[in-house]
Image (cartoon, rainbow, N blue to C red):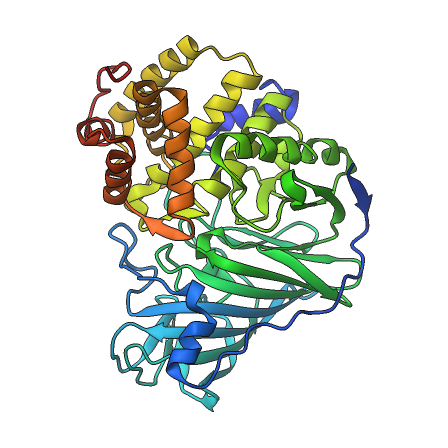
Length: 488
């Protein structure tokens, strides 16, 4: 998610822009639908088919009402149909699930859509959506015995409140725009506004998403584009995705394609043709990020521009509010670069629970600041001065970054104070060792969920120096810790 933008800043950026080889085409038909892996009948084979989607879910200490540690969803197959005229979403969700313990029923996060059918391993079962926004399926399950849940549903989407006081945020989840299209941003939760889901980052899963839209409209989702049948658009995530990093958009989009470093396909979906030259800067952002932090960790990349004033690091397809196509170059570049940085820090390596949001946002903001130093003339002395001043203000207002408050999700301290800690590590290690550490963190923990403890252990082991006291001070102190210099 982009750092907080004050209301006044949004207004100024929108009104006056003060923050100062690609082909464009309609969405064409593409090759047909590929065949998804077919789960076998035995438990062992079923696990093998979706092995990459296996997780160890936990209960969130800040938002315990979302997600469950009783289920590990291995794979989501989503067939979605959006009607702009009726404002109705019709869906079939097929979930491959590994129960983590014996239970008399199973429950997933889900908005109260009308249930058309629910089957468990091919048999109809009793199910209902509760006032707590849980899909409860009344059938006993056994630990480590895989099952297939299929849910057919339809209805008009509704959002869920964001637990934040930030002035640049809006309700979470599937949102209907002025033209009848839809889009979504959903951090820390909100995927449950469009499909039944274990809506917590500790339960990453594989995805196949098919989106059907009316003629002349396009469907966009997270994952790699894998074909188009008529007006059904298909996407596959063959590596795990956290539910908050999935995306869906349907609209009258224009489409452009590009090639990133090493031939990575990049796709842009947008409404205003004037946005395309800026979107094409993605290749440069990805190239710079690869040089600093190692290979881009996914099969494809892209941006979908939606009717929003925010931006989100949705995996393989950044969701960018149209506000950012109207601001100046610096503001646009730093925002979009920030969301691409999350593909390494937040998507490829994901936090385990929301206490450690600094682990995502501290990295992305520090990467953004490094880009600003190299491309926009921010001196290192200015970086240090800005960092320390803002760090002190934010600790006083919000507290240390390791103790986020339930109703202040995305507060700026998890960005700035987390980035300040990384800046201290950078100063201590120097360029070569710091960037080796950053590359190794992604490479060695690819497609996993990590914590403060695992990060500290990795830093200490990789560098051969005990940085525990430094990390603890910058994450826990109510005031800004003193500067430290290079290691002797």
